[in-house]
Length: 626
Ligand SMILES: Nc1ncnc2c1ncn2[C@@H]1O[C@H](COP(=O)(O)OP(=O)(O)OC[C@H]2O[C@@H]([n+]3cccc(C(=O)O)c3)[C@H](O)[C@@H]2O)[C@@H](O)[C@H]1O
Ligand SMILES: Nc1ncnc2c1ncn2[C@@H]1O[C@H](COP(=O)(O)OP(=O)(O)OP(=O)(O)O)[C@@H](O)[C@H]1O
Ligand SMILES: NC(=O)CC[C@H](N)C(=O)O
Image (cartoon, rainbow, N blue to C red):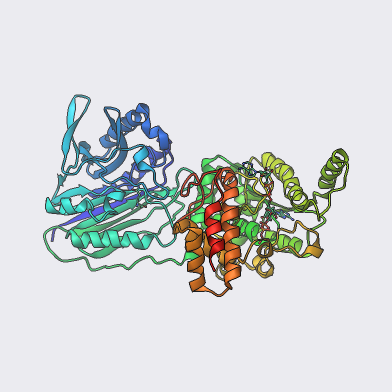
């Protein structure tokens, strides 16, 4: 039986980091050649990185990319490789892939369906290539086929579906099948979102069945450019069966898999795999760990600083950094993990090497994560104990100080100039906000000392309704949990205590979320200030993801229960009112990771005017309903 060995590799690229990107590509090719892979698929736009944004409109990025493309091509001896790059022809940019066979460029295929939904804005940079149209591209006096091209390599006839090309009902593979393709390669840059892998399985396995072909799918890997995380999924399917897949969300730079396909028989290979079906909590843990690791090293920061209140949000962020370290150590090993973090000079490696795993992880966490509990007179003992217990359990450095004196000083200065005392009855928000702001300068100061990243603990529910003090608890450079709602964060913490053995969470998981900004006699809780978090999450989904009007949201909630009409009406009005006046805060939040099937970040998924009527007519219509 004659077979062909086909592979796909995920690579962890960074926009215009030519050295890193080319090295990863060459390493993937080398690894593939060592494994006798004959045809290798690499991800979309892997030479430049997918997230170059308006750089795709420059001439020089495309010019540099094509130079690197030919340089890499020269080293592709004894193998066929696909290389993704932007190409500019007569001032128009196309999203392309180059096929190289044994060191020779065979041609270029251009993307026909551009991704322009949710987090994708490809039509801003690229022009879609018309189907069935082929031209030539002239480079160094040689003409190469360009456009909707099919390639004959060994016994295979190769066609490309470049990511979104496969996501349409009228997908490009249909025409490739009609033209006799036997192998479809799919170089992708498909952002991570909960449960999204299942859709890819349908496209890949379904495509291989429908087109009676072998199908190779290779996604980008890692937090490429700041907000989007790519899970590095690689799938190989043959005539309706999944025959190879990799582990997603790896900390490695290159993640290669391959399979042997019979070219002279209709038989399907013996090993048939099922879907890598991860639960949402597990995916959140893995994706956020990888997102943080890449963000830290690509921003050249030395670890993280966190204002740790002992409540759910800051504790979730602390656990994520601890998990990032443990995952990195397990996957890469001690030396490689510290080297990749650019932090190895901060450690005595020989001393660390002899420690058991958890001891090692704790010592590293002490350097990577510095936390501080910052009390005011309204802080409770329980939150202090919770913060301290958690920090100790993961090994983070923990400081405890009071910011009361500074806050009292600010208060006295203002009282002096306005010539009246500030009181909780009259000045509630002012007195709350100064406490949240009083914590910001000193935690930023510690962050500067450490040359670290300040984590902001903002979550999506808070972002919906602006329940945070600007330049206070929003202070920070990265917001790792801003892509998920508070209800989910709380359930994830319970999951992490049980499933990740994070025993330090036992106090956090018993506390009711509170800002702890009012004196204790006011018994402040988030849900009293706002509404039950599960209702907030339900309204958010209907209003933002499903794009329903206030009346439509209210009507849908009534069918679900279990609250009264008046309660729902009050909360829906509150949501839309707070949502609209707080758009400016969402514009100013630190970069956050896209996690769910929607988010509220105006720079990635959801755009909304900063100034608007505040749904005046729509909320009035809701009021009129019986
Ligand atoms: N469109 C716009 N563009 C620019 N600025 C705009 C603006 N609209 C209002 N503003 C300004 O925004 C300011 C008000 O915003 P800001 O000072 O942030 O304060 P604000 O949103 O009024 O209040 C903060 C809220 O967050 C809650 N909080 C704070 C801290 C921590 C926690 C917690 O859960 O731990 C909760 C607190 O209970 C309160 O409900 C005003 O000065 C207003 O002029
Ligand atoms: N006593 C404190 N010490 C240190 N940081 C604090 C303190 N109180 C609040 N913060 C900071 O302000 C952020 C916002 O508070 P918020 O109440 O929204 O979150 P949380 O306390 O982590 O969780 P929860 O809302 O469940 O109590 C905290 O995550 C933390 O970073
Ligand atoms: N790069 C792309 O074409 C991505 C689009 C595709 N719909 C995805 O989300 O995976």
